[in-house]
Image (cartoon, rainbow, N blue to C red; front, top):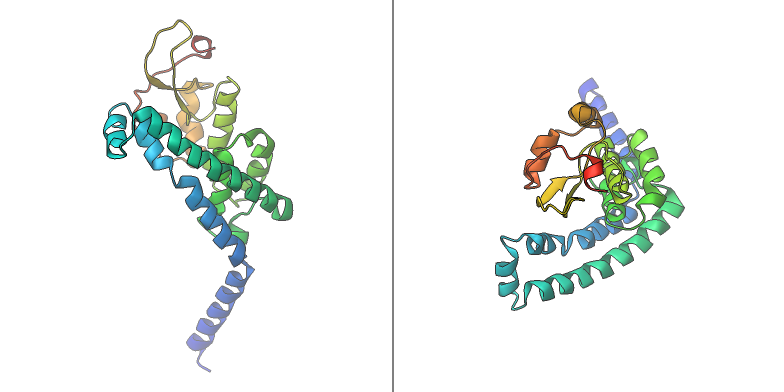
Length: 218
């Protein structure tokens, strides 16, 4: 047998072995769960935008308030079912990372937990997966930021924005939640694998970036 043909067959054999290691049934389930996770979030995002919510609601023949309530009810129902499913997956496999379900399916469980009230419980599971390279580290960083901001603490990577008045009652619209050591945030973001600075990320979120101190929001 010619050397090149032998090398090709060996490569195909190793590829097949690698593919066999993936849990394809679980991958399919997680892909479906991610579709559910995102099913109504796009329209809910539009309904939260003051510039678009009225026109979107009008197309649905509902008021903005009615449309928001209707679609959140549907999304919450989907989210609840997804959390039950993912918790069962965690019990059986731990975090379903790239070596188990491949990429980008390895991000599905992260999205479901990120959109749940279970972050405190499963953040250590997500960190362990990120430390092992089973999940992009930037996703762990985003979940950590959300946990910290949920608890009224300074975030680390500047990924979370909120829309609420400051402590003094002044309404500045949406802003990036206070960051610990804001001067070093872009270095931390780069190390964690983000491809945008905090300023660029704020612009993506349609927020004017400015440094807000934690004392201004508590």
